[in-house]
Image 1 (tube, rainbow, N blue to C red):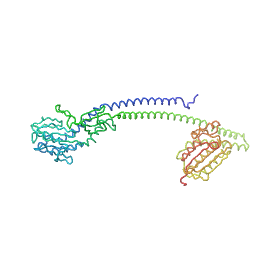
Image 2: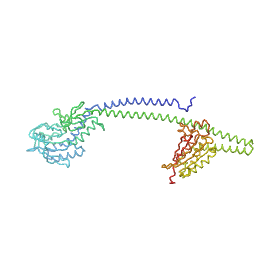
Image 3: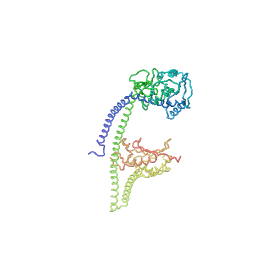
Image 4: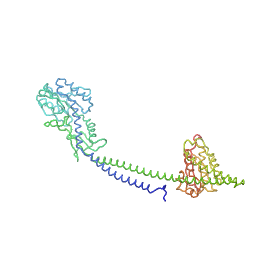
Length: 560
């Protein structure tokens, strides 16, 4: 019958199921990430014209709002307080936190000989006469013709200069009987009583640097390329003049969307008989390969996350199985320990009981025999006490409070360990080398003595009767530590058993086969004590045959 403590096919089946489930999940997640990527591609690619239209509308809304806030009504300047009205609107516009979208704001007033021009300074706020800029000569001629009897609205070739008439009652210079008093420009001007006239004109020049470096890039990021993604090329054109571009070509390319923009500060569609068309064209196109790149990156990221999660699940399952196996092996070793200790305890108890009954009943009366029986009882009582002590020592080994720290002479420790194991090593030749020149170590002398007692006893038990035990020690140059070797010439340790040699309850196959007494705790206890002292212990094959145990302990720094 198979032992329930041995690895079962159920656990290996669990590992196989975990592998299959994780593989199926990886395939499904690969498909799902593909579907998500396709949906992302469709979402990012859809509504390009709608997004371009929203960008254009946002631009025109901000431009119209700025013009409307700066433009006074005709009634405000009909009383002759021209400068006060313009400055009041300028201050209100600046206090609203408006963006600096205009490089120049000017006011043109028709005179008896020519149209006078004044600049509305933004800092400080003032209306200052100025000469007509060369770039405004076309506007100057148009306003002169309008003041003389009429002219169509001025259309700047670049779209950067915007002219707004300020209509009011028939007071002051200006043409009589112009357009009807309706608000053709959608800026909320109130009609004035009497025949309307154009009292003045307000002129706005869009700041081209701000437009190119700040205004349009922000709109493109908001409406076309959200976040850090650069999926679309966009440019703003006026005929052959390109006012802005984020990388798009100047010629016609496949898939371009063109949307009119810059309604010159007017509201779109205010009157059917006075249509307002965009001075510029917003040209938008998908950037070649960028959409696929972003979607591929998103898919790769999702797939990598899925793979990592699957690996974590698989690793967790593997660790669970491994821990279960280790727990099973530990339980098996404990059961073996209980059986071994029970047997080991029974042997000395049987001897002690038998010898004591013989003495009690007077079976043995000769002094020599009484002494022999007494020695036998004492020996087996010592063996019994040693096993009980090992169990108790193992339960408290490695605890910080159980290790005292003081300078310890390794020569004395090894000498005391040799005397404590004299009965075990009586039939062995013990050679000691290099003890007198050793510096002291920092530790607990009784705990260290227990380590080497165990190593010497093991060497005597497993090295065979009449064997040889070698004890050598030296200071490791440059490492400030002492190396102590305890070697024997017995049958040695099988390489497959070296890894578990210091595991609690571990006993080798040879020890179990020959029924060599022991609990399987001695080497584990020695390892715990050495590591509690900041050292380490290892086992290897002895050059002359047999086994060699090596202990490294740090030198006491206070002795330097």
